[in-house]
Image (cartoon, rainbow over all chains, first blue to last red; front, side, top):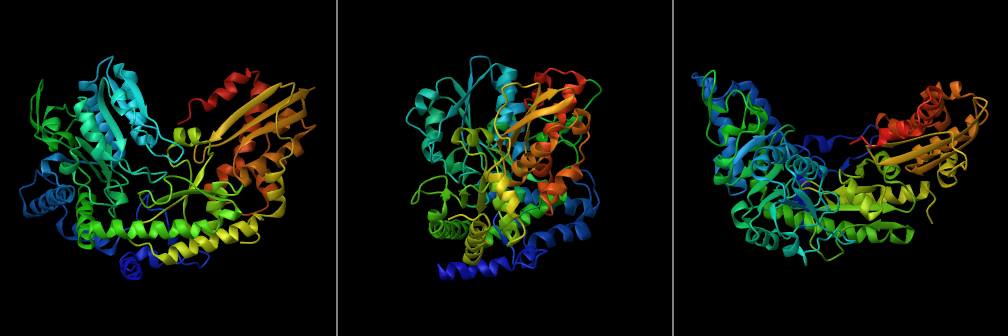
Length: 414
Length: 138
Protein backbone atom coordinates (compact mmCIF):
# COMPACT_ATOMS: atom_id res chain seq x y z
CA UNK A 1 0.00 0.00 0.00
CA UNK A 2 2.77 2.46 0.94
CA UNK A 3 4.69 1.75 -2.28
CA UNK A 4 1.49 2.04 -4.27
CA UNK A 5 0.71 5.38 -2.67
CA UNK A 6 4.23 6.68 -3.35
CA UNK A 7 3.77 5.92 -7.02
CA UNK A 8 0.42 7.73 -7.02
CA UNK A 9 2.13 10.75 -5.44
CA UNK A 10 4.67 10.77 -8.24
CA UNK A 11 1.86 10.42 -10.78
CA UNK A 12 0.03 13.37 -9.21
CA UNK A 13 3.03 15.54 -10.14
CA UNK A 14 2.26 14.84 -13.81
CA UNK A 15 -1.02 16.78 -13.41
CA UNK A 16 -0.35 20.53 -13.23
CA UNK A 17 -3.78 21.39 -11.85
CA UNK A 18 -3.29 19.17 -8.79
CA UNK A 19 -0.42 21.36 -7.63
CA UNK A 20 -2.64 24.42 -7.49
CA UNK A 21 -4.20 25.71 -4.29
CA UNK A 22 -7.86 26.61 -3.98
CA UNK A 23 -8.90 30.26 -3.62
CA UNK A 24 -8.96 29.65 0.15
CA UNK A 25 -5.35 28.45 0.03
CA UNK A 26 -6.20 24.78 0.58
CA UNK A 27 -4.51 21.79 -0.97
CA UNK A 28 -6.80 20.39 -3.68
CA UNK A 29 -8.16 16.90 -3.02
CA UNK A 30 -9.80 16.20 -6.36
CA UNK A 31 -12.33 13.40 -5.81
CA UNK A 32 -14.59 13.90 -8.83
CA UNK A 33 -12.85 11.96 -11.59
CA UNK A 34 -16.03 10.00 -12.31
CA UNK A 35 -17.44 13.28 -13.67
CA UNK A 36 -14.25 14.16 -15.54
CA UNK A 37 -10.59 13.42 -14.96
CA UNK A 38 -7.73 15.88 -14.79
CA UNK A 39 -5.13 15.98 -17.58
CA UNK A 40 -1.44 15.11 -17.38
CA UNK A 41 1.25 17.36 -18.83
CA UNK A 42 1.88 14.81 -21.60
CA UNK A 43 -1.68 15.23 -22.92
CA UNK A 44 -1.61 19.03 -22.66
CA UNK A 45 1.72 19.08 -24.51
CA UNK A 46 0.41 16.75 -27.22
CA UNK A 47 -2.54 19.07 -27.81
CA UNK A 48 -0.43 22.22 -28.09
CA UNK A 49 2.34 20.51 -30.07
CA UNK A 50 -0.14 19.21 -32.60
CA UNK A 51 -1.59 22.68 -33.18
CA UNK A 52 1.90 24.23 -33.28
CA UNK A 53 3.59 21.69 -35.54
CA UNK A 54 1.25 19.32 -37.35
CA UNK A 55 -2.15 20.90 -37.76
CA UNK A 56 -4.15 20.95 -41.00
CA UNK A 57 -7.41 19.37 -42.09
CA UNK A 58 -7.21 15.63 -42.59
CA UNK A 59 -7.92 13.07 -45.34
CA UNK A 60 -8.07 15.59 -48.22
CA UNK A 61 -4.92 17.68 -48.43
CA UNK A 62 -1.97 16.36 -50.42
CA UNK A 63 0.62 18.61 -48.81
CA UNK A 64 3.00 17.44 -46.09
CA UNK A 65 1.18 19.09 -43.19
CA UNK A 66 -2.15 17.51 -44.11
CA UNK A 67 -0.44 14.16 -44.30
CA UNK A 68 1.15 14.58 -40.88
CA UNK A 69 -2.21 15.60 -39.40
CA UNK A 70 -3.95 12.62 -41.01
CA UNK A 71 -1.28 10.25 -39.69
CA UNK A 72 -1.59 11.66 -36.18
CA UNK A 73 -5.39 11.42 -36.28
CA UNK A 74 -5.49 7.87 -37.61
CA UNK A 75 -2.57 6.95 -35.35
CA UNK A 76 -4.67 7.98 -32.36
CA UNK A 77 -7.48 5.74 -33.61
CA UNK A 78 -5.00 2.84 -33.72
CA UNK A 79 -3.93 3.59 -30.17
CA UNK A 80 -7.52 3.59 -28.89
CA UNK A 81 -8.23 0.40 -30.83
CA UNK A 82 -5.18 -1.30 -29.33
CA UNK A 83 -6.18 -0.09 -25.87
CA UNK A 84 -9.42 -2.11 -25.94
CA UNK A 85 -8.18 -4.86 -28.32
CA UNK A 86 -10.25 -3.78 -31.34
CA UNK A 87 -9.37 -3.09 -34.98
CA UNK A 88 -8.95 0.59 -35.94
CA UNK A 89 -11.86 0.29 -38.41
CA UNK A 90 -14.08 -0.62 -35.47
CA UNK A 91 -13.41 2.66 -33.63
CA UNK A 92 -15.69 5.58 -34.55
CA UNK A 93 -14.83 8.97 -33.08
CA UNK A 94 -17.69 10.70 -31.31
CA UNK A 95 -17.90 13.66 -28.97
CA UNK A 96 -18.43 11.45 -25.93
CA UNK A 97 -20.19 8.34 -24.61
CA UNK A 98 -23.60 9.97 -25.01
CA UNK A 99 -23.08 10.65 -28.70
CA UNK A 100 -21.75 7.11 -29.24
CA UNK A 101 -24.90 5.66 -27.67
CA UNK A 102 -27.11 7.98 -29.71
CA UNK A 103 -25.30 6.85 -32.87
CA UNK A 104 -26.24 3.24 -32.14
CA UNK A 105 -29.78 4.23 -31.20
CA UNK A 106 -30.41 6.23 -34.38
CA UNK A 107 -28.51 4.02 -36.80
CA UNK A 108 -28.67 0.40 -35.59
CA UNK A 109 -31.82 0.91 -33.50
CA UNK A 110 -34.00 2.47 -36.18
CA UNK A 111 -32.88 -0.20 -38.66
CA UNK A 112 -33.35 -3.24 -36.43
CA UNK A 113 -36.16 -2.67 -33.97
CA UNK A 114 -39.82 -3.42 -34.68
CA UNK A 115 -43.00 -3.36 -32.62
CA UNK A 116 -42.94 -6.38 -30.32
CA UNK A 117 -39.14 -6.29 -29.90
CA UNK A 118 -37.63 -5.34 -26.56
CA UNK A 119 -34.66 -3.36 -25.27
CA UNK A 120 -33.21 -4.46 -21.93
CA UNK A 121 -31.32 -1.98 -19.78
CA UNK A 122 -30.87 -1.71 -16.00
CA UNK A 123 -32.17 0.40 -13.15
CA UNK A 124 -28.63 1.72 -12.57
CA UNK A 125 -28.12 3.53 -15.83
CA UNK A 126 -26.84 7.05 -16.36
CA UNK A 127 -29.42 9.13 -18.24
CA UNK A 128 -27.16 8.81 -21.31
CA UNK A 129 -27.88 5.08 -21.45
CA UNK A 130 -31.58 5.44 -20.68
CA UNK A 131 -33.08 8.43 -22.49
CA UNK A 132 -31.93 7.32 -26.00
CA UNK A 133 -33.65 3.95 -25.42
CA UNK A 134 -36.84 5.57 -24.13
CA UNK A 135 -37.00 7.60 -27.34
CA UNK A 136 -36.06 4.64 -29.54
CA UNK A 137 -38.76 2.52 -27.90
CA UNK A 138 -41.32 5.27 -28.47
CA UNK A 139 -40.30 5.63 -32.14
CA UNK A 140 -40.15 1.93 -33.02
CA UNK A 141 -42.88 0.52 -30.78
CA UNK A 142 -40.32 -1.63 -28.95
CA UNK A 143 -40.71 -2.34 -25.25
CA UNK A 144 -38.18 -1.05 -22.70
CA UNK A 145 -37.35 -3.46 -19.86
CA UNK A 146 -35.11 -3.19 -16.83
CA UNK A 147 -32.75 -5.47 -14.98
CA UNK A 148 -33.64 -4.67 -11.37
CA UNK A 149 -31.10 -3.83 -8.68
CA UNK A 150 -31.29 -4.61 -4.95
CA UNK A 151 -30.81 -2.16 -2.07
CA UNK A 152 -27.02 -2.32 -2.56
CA UNK A 153 -27.37 -1.45 -6.23
CA UNK A 154 -26.42 -4.98 -7.31
CA UNK A 155 -28.12 -6.43 -10.38
CA UNK A 156 -30.63 -9.23 -9.91
CA UNK A 157 -29.79 -11.78 -12.58
CA UNK A 158 -31.89 -14.73 -11.41
CA UNK A 159 -34.71 -13.88 -13.84
CA UNK A 160 -32.41 -12.64 -16.62
CA UNK A 161 -33.25 -15.38 -19.12
CA UNK A 162 -36.98 -14.67 -18.76
CA UNK A 163 -36.33 -10.93 -19.19
CA UNK A 164 -34.26 -11.63 -22.31
CA UNK A 165 -37.17 -13.15 -24.22
CA UNK A 166 -37.78 -11.08 -27.35
CA UNK A 167 -34.89 -8.72 -26.52
CA UNK A 168 -32.94 -7.39 -29.53
CA UNK A 169 -30.65 -5.07 -27.61
CA UNK A 170 -29.12 -5.20 -24.12
CA UNK A 171 -27.73 -1.76 -23.15
CA UNK A 172 -25.95 -1.69 -19.80
CA UNK A 173 -23.18 0.19 -18.05
CA UNK A 174 -20.05 -1.71 -17.09
CA UNK A 175 -19.50 0.27 -13.89
CA UNK A 176 -22.26 2.33 -12.27
CA UNK A 177 -21.35 6.02 -12.13
CA UNK A 178 -23.39 6.63 -9.00
CA UNK A 179 -22.70 3.50 -6.92
CA UNK A 180 -19.58 1.87 -8.38
CA UNK A 181 -21.34 -1.47 -8.97
CA UNK A 182 -19.45 -3.59 -11.50
CA UNK A 183 -21.69 -5.49 -13.88
CA UNK A 184 -20.65 -9.14 -14.40
CA UNK A 185 -20.39 -8.84 -18.20
CA UNK A 186 -18.82 -12.28 -18.54
CA UNK A 187 -22.05 -13.73 -17.16
CA UNK A 188 -24.51 -11.48 -18.99
CA UNK A 189 -23.06 -11.28 -22.52
CA UNK A 190 -23.24 -15.03 -23.35
CA UNK A 191 -26.80 -15.23 -22.01
CA UNK A 192 -27.80 -12.16 -24.06
CA UNK A 193 -26.21 -13.61 -27.19
CA UNK A 194 -27.94 -16.95 -26.59
CA UNK A 195 -31.23 -15.04 -26.55
CA UNK A 196 -30.33 -13.42 -29.88
CA UNK A 197 -29.62 -9.95 -28.49
CA UNK A 198 -26.87 -7.50 -29.37
CA UNK A 199 -25.00 -6.06 -26.35
CA UNK A 200 -24.02 -2.41 -25.96
CA UNK A 201 -21.84 -1.47 -23.00
CA UNK A 202 -21.61 2.03 -21.58
CA UNK A 203 -17.96 1.87 -20.55
CA UNK A 204 -17.55 5.51 -19.49
CA UNK A 205 -16.62 4.40 -15.97
CA UNK A 206 -14.65 1.26 -16.82
CA UNK A 207 -12.37 1.96 -19.79
CA UNK A 208 -10.50 4.73 -17.88
CA UNK A 209 -10.02 2.58 -14.80
CA UNK A 210 -9.42 -1.07 -15.71
CA UNK A 211 -8.34 -3.31 -18.53
CA UNK A 212 -11.23 -3.69 -20.97
CA UNK A 213 -10.86 -6.19 -23.81
CA UNK A 214 -13.79 -6.07 -26.23
CA UNK A 215 -12.83 -9.40 -27.82
CA UNK A 216 -12.57 -11.23 -24.48
CA UNK A 217 -15.85 -9.69 -23.30
CA UNK A 218 -17.40 -10.34 -26.73
CA UNK A 219 -19.51 -7.15 -26.52
CA UNK A 220 -21.03 -5.84 -29.75
CA UNK A 221 -20.90 -2.11 -29.04
CA UNK A 222 -18.93 -0.20 -26.44
CA UNK A 223 -19.01 3.54 -25.75
CA UNK A 224 -16.52 5.66 -23.81
CA UNK A 225 -15.48 9.29 -23.26
CA UNK A 226 -11.96 10.68 -23.63
CA UNK A 227 -12.34 13.31 -20.94
CA UNK A 228 -12.81 10.69 -18.22
CA UNK A 229 -9.53 8.95 -19.19
CA UNK A 230 -7.05 11.85 -19.00
CA UNK A 231 -7.95 13.06 -22.50
CA UNK A 232 -9.53 16.35 -23.55
CA UNK A 233 -13.24 17.11 -23.59
CA UNK A 234 -15.19 16.78 -26.84
CA UNK A 235 -13.71 13.45 -27.94
CA UNK A 236 -14.97 9.95 -27.25
CA UNK A 237 -15.50 6.81 -29.23
CA UNK A 238 -17.81 4.01 -30.21
CA UNK A 239 -16.49 0.51 -30.68
CA UNK A 240 -18.67 -1.70 -32.86
CA UNK A 241 -18.02 -5.15 -34.30
CA UNK A 242 -17.03 -4.77 -37.94
CA UNK A 243 -19.99 -6.70 -39.38
CA UNK A 244 -22.48 -4.65 -37.36
CA UNK A 245 -20.93 -1.29 -38.31
CA UNK A 246 -20.77 -2.27 -41.98
CA UNK A 247 -24.47 -3.15 -42.05
CA UNK A 248 -25.56 0.06 -40.32
CA UNK A 249 -26.77 3.17 -42.14
CA UNK A 250 -24.91 6.44 -41.47
CA UNK A 251 -25.92 8.58 -38.50
CA UNK A 252 -24.84 12.12 -39.42
CA UNK A 253 -24.31 12.80 -43.10
CA UNK A 254 -22.31 15.30 -45.14
CA UNK A 255 -18.63 15.71 -45.94
CA UNK A 256 -15.90 13.12 -45.31
CA UNK A 257 -18.36 10.26 -44.80
CA UNK A 258 -18.87 9.80 -48.54
CA UNK A 259 -17.12 7.86 -51.28
CA UNK A 260 -18.79 9.59 -54.19
CA UNK A 261 -21.64 12.08 -54.44
CA UNK A 262 -23.92 12.86 -57.36
CA UNK A 263 -26.84 15.26 -57.39
CA UNK A 264 -29.28 12.42 -56.77
CA UNK A 265 -27.28 9.69 -55.08
CA UNK A 266 -24.37 9.14 -52.75
CA UNK A 267 -22.12 6.19 -52.03
CA UNK A 268 -20.99 6.16 -48.43
CA UNK A 269 -17.43 5.80 -47.24
CA UNK A 270 -16.15 2.65 -45.55
CA UNK A 271 -16.19 2.18 -41.80
CA UNK A 272 -15.27 3.92 -39.60
CA UNK A 273 -15.39 7.11 -41.73
CA UNK A 274 -18.96 6.39 -42.81
CA UNK A 275 -19.95 7.57 -39.33
CA UNK A 276 -17.70 10.63 -39.16
CA UNK A 277 -19.43 13.38 -41.13
CA UNK A 278 -17.81 16.80 -41.29
CA UNK A 279 -14.40 17.83 -40.01
CA UNK A 280 -13.64 15.72 -36.95
CA UNK A 281 -12.33 16.90 -33.61
CA UNK A 282 -8.82 16.22 -34.93
CA UNK A 283 -6.59 17.71 -32.25
CA UNK A 284 -8.56 16.28 -29.33
CA UNK A 285 -8.45 12.83 -30.92
CA UNK A 286 -4.67 13.17 -31.21
CA UNK A 287 -4.45 14.24 -27.56
CA UNK A 288 -6.63 11.29 -26.55
CA UNK A 289 -4.06 9.09 -28.26
CA UNK A 290 -1.45 10.66 -25.97
CA UNK A 291 -3.70 9.94 -22.97
CA UNK A 292 -3.87 6.27 -24.00
CA UNK A 293 -0.05 6.19 -24.22
CA UNK A 294 0.15 7.74 -20.77
CA UNK A 295 -2.30 5.25 -19.21
CA UNK A 296 -0.64 2.28 -20.87
CA UNK A 297 2.78 3.33 -19.66
CA UNK A 298 1.47 3.30 -16.09
CA UNK A 299 -0.49 0.13 -16.70
CA UNK A 300 -4.23 -0.45 -16.36
CA UNK A 301 -3.57 -3.29 -13.93
CA UNK A 302 -1.72 -0.94 -11.60
CA UNK A 303 -4.45 1.70 -11.91
CA UNK A 304 -7.16 -0.83 -10.99
CA UNK A 305 -5.13 -2.14 -8.03
CA UNK A 306 -4.42 1.36 -6.81
CA UNK A 307 -8.08 2.41 -6.98
CA UNK A 308 -9.16 -0.82 -5.34
CA UNK A 309 -6.87 -0.33 -2.34
CA UNK A 310 -7.63 3.40 -2.07
CA UNK A 311 -11.38 2.71 -2.15
CA UNK A 312 -11.02 0.01 0.52
CA UNK A 313 -9.01 2.45 2.64
CA UNK A 314 -11.60 5.21 2.19
CA UNK A 315 -14.47 2.85 3.09
CA UNK A 316 -12.61 1.83 6.23
CA UNK A 317 -11.93 5.46 7.23
CA UNK A 318 -15.54 6.48 6.50
CA UNK A 319 -16.67 3.84 9.01
CA UNK A 320 -15.32 5.99 11.85
CA UNK A 321 -18.00 8.56 10.95
CA UNK A 322 -20.87 6.08 11.02
CA UNK A 323 -21.73 6.81 14.67
CA UNK A 324 -22.26 10.45 13.64
CA UNK A 325 -24.68 9.42 10.90
CA UNK A 326 -22.57 8.73 7.83
CA UNK A 327 -24.22 6.24 5.44
CA UNK A 328 -22.34 4.68 2.52
CA UNK A 329 -24.36 3.32 -0.41
CA UNK A 330 -23.60 0.74 -3.04
CA UNK A 331 -22.09 -2.74 -2.93
CA UNK A 332 -21.36 -3.95 0.64
CA UNK A 333 -17.77 -4.05 1.94
CA UNK A 334 -15.81 -6.92 0.47
CA UNK A 335 -17.70 -6.82 -2.85
CA UNK A 336 -15.84 -5.75 -5.97
CA UNK A 337 -16.62 -2.14 -6.85
CA UNK A 338 -15.16 0.64 -8.93
CA UNK A 339 -13.43 3.62 -7.29
CA UNK A 340 -16.73 5.35 -6.57
CA UNK A 341 -18.29 5.94 -3.14
CA UNK A 342 -21.73 7.54 -2.74
CA UNK A 343 -22.72 8.67 0.72
CA UNK A 344 -24.86 10.91 2.89
CA UNK A 345 -24.04 12.35 6.29
CA UNK A 346 -26.71 12.76 8.97
CA UNK A 347 -29.35 15.27 7.89
CA UNK A 348 -26.85 17.34 5.92
CA UNK A 349 -28.11 17.60 2.35
CA UNK A 350 -25.53 16.39 -0.18
CA UNK A 351 -25.28 19.86 -1.71
CA UNK A 352 -24.55 21.48 1.62
CA UNK A 353 -22.03 18.75 2.34
CA UNK A 354 -20.27 19.32 -0.99
CA UNK A 355 -20.13 23.06 -0.26
CA UNK A 356 -18.65 22.44 3.19
CA UNK A 357 -16.07 20.02 1.77
CA UNK A 358 -15.23 22.51 -0.97
CA UNK A 359 -14.26 25.06 1.67
CA UNK A 360 -11.65 22.51 2.81
CA UNK A 361 -10.34 21.97 -0.73
CA UNK A 362 -12.15 18.65 -1.24
CA UNK A 363 -13.95 18.39 -4.60
CA UNK A 364 -16.82 15.87 -4.57
CA UNK A 365 -19.96 15.64 -6.64
CA UNK A 366 -23.39 16.12 -5.10
CA UNK A 367 -26.81 15.48 -6.56
CA UNK A 368 -28.44 12.70 -8.54
CA UNK A 369 -25.39 11.95 -10.72
CA UNK A 370 -27.63 11.79 -13.82
CA UNK A 371 -29.38 8.73 -12.36
CA UNK A 372 -32.67 10.29 -11.25
CA UNK A 373 -34.80 7.10 -11.50
CA UNK A 374 -32.29 5.20 -9.33
CA UNK A 375 -32.30 7.95 -6.69
CA UNK A 376 -36.10 7.93 -6.69
CA UNK A 377 -36.18 4.14 -6.35
CA UNK A 378 -33.69 4.19 -3.47
CA UNK A 379 -35.46 7.11 -1.79
CA UNK A 380 -32.39 9.37 -1.74
CA UNK A 381 -33.05 13.00 -2.73
CA UNK A 382 -29.32 13.31 -3.47
CA UNK A 383 -25.99 11.81 -2.48
CA UNK A 384 -22.43 13.06 -2.23
CA UNK A 385 -19.97 11.08 -4.33
CA UNK A 386 -16.22 10.71 -3.99
CA UNK A 387 -14.47 9.04 -6.91
CA UNK A 388 -10.83 8.08 -7.28
CA UNK A 389 -8.30 7.90 -10.07
CA UNK A 390 -4.64 7.10 -10.57
CA UNK A 391 -3.46 10.41 -9.08
CA UNK A 392 -5.39 10.18 -5.80
CA UNK A 393 -3.55 9.31 -2.61
CA UNK A 394 -4.24 8.46 1.02
CA UNK A 395 -3.66 12.13 1.75
CA UNK A 396 -6.76 12.94 -0.33
CA UNK A 397 -8.76 10.47 1.77
CA UNK A 398 -7.37 12.02 4.99
CA UNK A 399 -8.43 15.45 3.76
CA UNK A 400 -11.93 14.14 3.00
CA UNK A 401 -12.28 12.57 6.46
CA UNK A 402 -11.08 15.65 8.29
CA UNK A 403 -13.39 17.89 6.19
CA UNK A 404 -16.30 15.58 7.05
CA UNK A 405 -15.50 15.97 10.76
CA UNK A 406 -15.60 19.76 10.32
CA UNK A 407 -18.93 19.55 8.47
CA UNK A 408 -20.35 17.47 11.34
CA UNK A 409 -19.21 20.17 13.77
CA UNK A 410 -20.86 22.97 11.79
CA UNK A 411 -24.12 21.06 11.41
CA UNK A 412 -23.85 20.05 15.09
CA UNK A 413 -24.16 16.33 14.43
CA UNK A 414 -23.85 14.30 17.64
CA UNK B 1 -15.80 27.83 7.53
CA UNK B 2 -17.55 28.55 10.82
CA UNK B 3 -19.52 31.45 9.33
CA UNK B 4 -20.36 29.49 6.20
CA UNK B 5 -23.62 28.15 7.55
CA UNK B 6 -25.15 30.56 10.06
CA UNK B 7 -27.09 29.36 13.05
CA UNK B 8 -30.40 30.77 11.71
CA UNK B 9 -30.01 28.91 8.40
CA UNK B 10 -29.66 25.61 10.25
CA UNK B 11 -32.62 26.56 12.43
CA UNK B 12 -34.86 27.21 9.41
CA UNK B 13 -33.54 24.02 7.77
CA UNK B 14 -34.32 21.80 10.77
CA UNK B 15 -37.48 23.65 11.86
CA UNK B 16 -38.94 25.05 8.67
CA UNK B 17 -41.72 27.61 9.25
CA UNK B 18 -45.10 27.14 7.56
CA UNK B 19 -44.08 23.72 6.28
CA UNK B 20 -46.82 21.40 5.04
CA UNK B 21 -50.14 21.91 3.26
CA UNK B 22 -53.13 24.27 3.44
CA UNK B 23 -56.73 23.17 3.66
CA UNK B 24 -57.81 25.89 1.28
CA UNK B 25 -55.44 26.39 -1.65
CA UNK B 26 -56.18 29.32 -3.96
CA UNK B 27 -52.89 29.27 -5.80
CA UNK B 28 -49.98 26.89 -5.92
CA UNK B 29 -46.87 26.12 -7.91
CA UNK B 30 -44.15 23.52 -7.83
CA UNK B 31 -40.73 23.24 -9.43
CA UNK B 32 -37.49 21.42 -9.11
CA UNK B 33 -33.86 22.23 -9.44
CA UNK B 34 -32.67 19.83 -12.14
CA UNK B 35 -29.10 20.25 -10.90
CA UNK B 36 -29.74 18.51 -7.60
CA UNK B 37 -33.31 17.21 -7.79
CA UNK B 38 -34.50 19.53 -5.02
CA UNK B 39 -38.23 20.09 -5.13
CA UNK B 40 -40.34 22.88 -3.63
CA UNK B 41 -44.07 23.49 -3.64
CA UNK B 42 -45.82 26.64 -2.45
CA UNK B 43 -49.52 26.83 -1.56
CA UNK B 44 -51.26 30.16 -1.00
CA UNK B 45 -54.58 31.09 0.55
CA UNK B 46 -55.66 34.44 -0.82
CA UNK B 47 -58.15 36.98 0.52
CA UNK B 48 -58.84 40.40 -1.01
CA UNK B 49 -55.76 40.12 -3.21
CA UNK B 50 -53.49 39.46 -0.23
CA UNK B 51 -51.73 36.35 1.03
CA UNK B 52 -53.78 35.19 4.00
CA UNK B 53 -51.82 31.99 4.64
CA UNK B 54 -48.97 30.07 3.07
CA UNK B 55 -47.31 26.65 3.27
CA UNK B 56 -44.35 25.19 1.48
CA UNK B 57 -43.29 21.58 1.12
CA UNK B 58 -40.56 19.59 -0.53
CA UNK B 59 -37.01 18.44 0.04
CA UNK B 60 -33.75 20.16 -0.48
CA UNK B 61 -30.54 21.58 0.87
CA UNK B 62 -30.28 23.93 3.84
CA UNK B 63 -29.94 26.93 1.52
CA UNK B 64 -33.07 26.20 -0.52
CA UNK B 65 -35.19 25.14 2.47
CA UNK B 66 -34.14 28.04 4.72
CA UNK B 67 -34.64 30.48 1.87
CA UNK B 68 -38.21 29.22 1.28
CA UNK B 69 -38.96 29.09 5.00
CA UNK B 70 -37.87 32.69 5.52
CA UNK B 71 -40.02 33.82 2.58
CA UNK B 72 -43.16 32.29 4.10
CA UNK B 73 -42.68 34.38 7.23
CA UNK B 74 -42.44 37.57 5.23
CA UNK B 75 -45.26 37.35 2.75
CA UNK B 76 -48.25 36.85 5.02
CA UNK B 77 -50.54 39.84 4.56
CA UNK B 78 -48.67 41.07 1.50
CA UNK B 79 -50.42 41.98 -1.75
CA UNK B 80 -50.08 39.36 -4.50
CA UNK B 81 -48.66 42.04 -6.83
CA UNK B 82 -45.89 42.73 -4.35
CA UNK B 83 -45.14 39.02 -3.91
CA UNK B 84 -44.90 38.66 -7.70
CA UNK B 85 -42.33 41.48 -7.72
CA UNK B 86 -40.06 40.22 -4.91
CA UNK B 87 -36.47 40.69 -6.05
CA UNK B 88 -33.70 38.10 -5.82
CA UNK B 89 -31.81 40.51 -3.59
CA UNK B 90 -34.48 39.87 -0.97
CA UNK B 91 -33.60 36.18 -0.55
CA UNK B 92 -29.88 36.87 -0.68
CA UNK B 93 -30.35 39.41 2.10
CA UNK B 94 -32.35 36.84 4.09
CA UNK B 95 -29.69 34.16 3.73
CA UNK B 96 -26.96 36.60 4.66
CA UNK B 97 -24.00 34.49 3.51
CA UNK B 98 -22.08 34.61 0.25
CA UNK B 99 -23.74 32.38 -2.35
CA UNK B 100 -21.58 30.95 -5.11
CA UNK B 101 -23.00 31.03 -8.65
CA UNK B 102 -23.65 27.27 -8.59
CA UNK B 103 -25.64 27.53 -5.37
CA UNK B 104 -27.67 30.52 -6.63
CA UNK B 105 -30.33 28.16 -8.01
CA UNK B 106 -30.73 26.63 -4.53
CA UNK B 107 -31.09 30.05 -2.94
CA UNK B 108 -33.68 31.28 -5.43
CA UNK B 109 -35.74 28.12 -6.07
CA UNK B 110 -38.34 28.97 -3.40
CA UNK B 111 -38.68 32.53 -4.67
CA UNK B 112 -39.13 31.34 -8.24
CA UNK B 113 -41.90 28.92 -7.22
CA UNK B 114 -43.61 31.46 -4.97
CA UNK B 115 -43.60 34.07 -7.71
CA UNK B 116 -45.01 31.68 -10.30
CA UNK B 117 -47.84 30.81 -7.88
CA UNK B 118 -48.57 34.52 -7.41
CA UNK B 119 -48.26 35.32 -11.13
CA UNK B 120 -50.45 32.37 -12.07
CA UNK B 121 -53.14 33.62 -9.73
CA UNK B 122 -52.91 37.17 -11.06
CA UNK B 123 -53.12 35.90 -14.65
CA UNK B 124 -56.03 33.62 -13.75
CA UNK B 125 -54.28 30.41 -14.84
CA UNK B 126 -55.56 27.18 -13.39
CA UNK B 127 -53.01 25.67 -10.97
CA UNK B 128 -52.33 22.75 -13.27
CA UNK B 129 -50.81 25.05 -15.87
CA UNK B 130 -48.40 26.44 -13.36
CA UNK B 131 -47.39 23.17 -11.75
CA UNK B 132 -47.30 21.55 -15.18
CA UNK B 133 -43.96 23.24 -15.81
CA UNK B 134 -42.30 20.47 -13.79
CA UNK B 135 -43.38 17.70 -16.11
CA UNK B 136 -41.45 18.85 -19.13
CA UNK B 137 -38.15 19.34 -17.37
CA UNK B 138 -35.24 16.98 -18.20
